[in-house]
Image 1 (cartoon, rainbow, N blue to C red):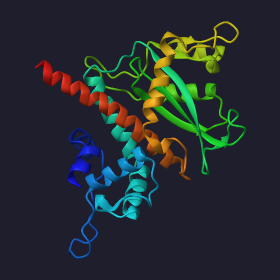
Image 2: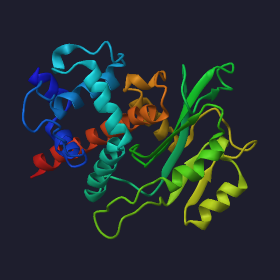
Image 3: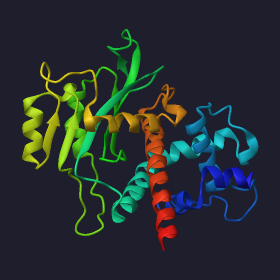
Length: 277
């Protein structure tokens, strides 16, 4: 069991998680009762649910905690925005090591069929079936830096401003924190003059495909990066279809997936630095 926990929650992830998780409140200081399940074992169980796509009831007992305990801990951490803070901490680590390329960013979205819950809507690309949409901005290398969810019937253009505003101030290797890319690429769903004007007012050069001018047969030399990032996020099988009734739980799984994608780049950068030294 220890080997499985270390595989799902490596030391790098555990050290970052300990920086953002709230302290444990002991309700029975006098002792007695069952021993509280460790946070690392519960985190490993949550990562297992996210990556495997199994239901909470299908969680194997090898983690030492029942599925009710894991779900309650997941719900509490989601309400306390632990996953958003973890994602932010990993982005800061990447930014401080110069792993984020702000020269150009790419925006796009992907629709997912939803069975129930808030922030769902009829998907116009799926015969009007209920669905949700994940909106994403990634840097030039494909690292996600801003994430949001909505109903599947929300037009992509309406998500651009909230996504750009949602980019957190991320640490840089030198100088102040940064939250604005030099350029932003998008497909024809964002082809509106007011959006281009809004981006220019904030010092961002829009690179948005124009309807009736540019061919839609290919994604272009830069916009394919976000499609690759979407496939990375799909490694979290819990995002293949939305089962969560609460929107904050679905957003939590999206944040966990994005954090794992960024963590892999962080671990790889550390390994390269060790080998170079």
